[in-house]
Length: 455
Image (cartoon, rainbow, N blue to C red; front, side, top):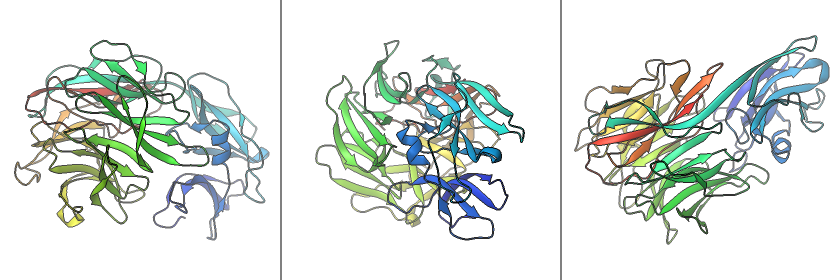
């Protein structure tokens, strides 16, 4: 129903059953351009509804994944209204938006159908006007799990580090384990927060009108890199800023950059991906000079991390819409990027690769056993190719607490890397935030990994 390369999701039937409406990005511009589209079943040119920009100007964000990802749930035939869930402030409610069946265009402002606290989702309407939906209570919190980092073995029980009704996401910790940054919705919008460990008080580090996310603290704990995302029109999508951990003026170091994935060991460079995520590169935070490490003409490259010696790069590649991601390792060249022919395949259907302190293990999240769990792959110390099968490090086979997709990290003792899990009541949910922190050379064996839990 859509051309190859188009990101499309959440199709619903129009009332007469001859068209489909769905959320899609037809990639007509350099920035993502998600909107609702209507296309005839027998083929033809799809029509852009023009809904998403209106929703964003109203202050709404997507219920499930935030930003511009507004998933339509049902077309209410008797009212020419489309039912969807959206977040406004700290609550997620059901909304309806008027769409003409003659022009397939939005004809007015969205209106709320519910005004509840928490998460009101998964709605379905009957022909006589009745509505059923889920009311969920969910929270993301930061946890830690002691492990033997260079052995790939758990060494203790989960311990909770944050507990509140907001979503605490994307934690990143300094090399000495004394400073942590993370993103949180505690004030109703997603901001970057800082906290001294152990037991310090969390303090907001940013106060931007747009989303501030994917914070990464430098190895020495003095600086914090984060992405500012502008979902509302004009959609400038993202830029990377660096600010002191103690607070102060933020400096833009990269324009049109989607996320700061990692810091170099010396704290001078940031590993990042561009808006279209076709390559991963380093940017010098002082000069602004950029150097590509890997690139691909069609694959999107995400969730990357430098090895402890900064000679290798582990990253996740999305091979196409609806295709499972794949983990690769590539050598870091002094000049030029490593071509795909030099990439080493580590695992398929996996997320969030993270190096062990000695660089001989690669941790990742995989649902190979039906649940997102933490796995580790032993690597050849010289070639960094997989040596033997991957082994499970910790399982999350619980209906109420499970590891969120794509979010595991590791640090040696005195460091902490973060992973996210979820703990929920109601139907299954999954995490939305990629996680990782700056790589740093280390030789300690014990480590702590941290989780965000969904409740």
